[in-house]
Length: 357
Image 1 (cartoon, rainbow, N blue to C red):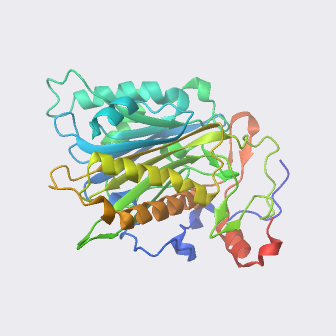
Image 2 (spheres, one colour):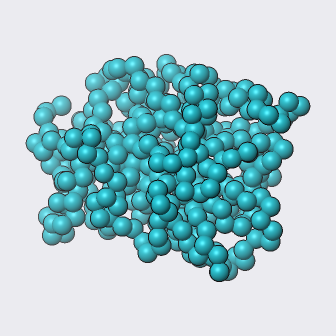
């Protein structure tokens, strides 16, 4: 690959969308702008790197006290089903989440699911458990990582689960996003939150994405490509018809599993705002769960508009954060994917529309 004509911003000055003044929508964000703004939700990552050929990992979204005896209401939506979302049939049938939601690499998903079952069986309250539905999503990180080596093992899963915490969430090239690529740029994990009002109650909704999908990036309605920013992409860039995106949505709104399925649909719809191609080979899924199983009567469907809007805005911002936090990566077989440089992005957004490629 030729040298970049405009070197990307240094990794230590990576900034999120809001840090750059890019604000999506009108609904306020939570204090962290992360899925962990939802009370009780924690996130853990384990990144697995063996240079130059392995760039992979696992990310755990852990709701407090979830288990087979204390399931949470949940819904799932498939935008394009070219993927391996383990646990989806029981999730659809019962609308109940029994485990944390884990994200990883495609060929590691089955090992991760087994490790999640083992971890759950050791948790208090699971001593007599004989049936358990692990929920594990995946994206194919095989462009930058030796996916056939299946590098994610049980110890990596346990570390992500045991290390899960509240507070700020690491984004970009971490955990399940270590080797992912989206919209022509190096991507990874991204997160965002919103605090919509449902009737007389303010609630919180948070999203986390594992971005790895094809298409052409759009930011605030502007098309942005590596070429338009003066970057030299690898000639062997991933096929735009392949890729995936896993989205996890958490909320403390008093809604039931059916309504959470409606929320999950909006999460997948939101990818269109970012320029997603929804190609034949893309696995685009959202899992949405509520953290208040005993909240009483759910909010009326007619009152859900602000929550839907919050999810659409949050997913769009989370995808952008996943790109802005990532760094240029050279991986498997010498393939290189450029990061999205914040300074060049701002220049492009300020330029006359006719000048954008």
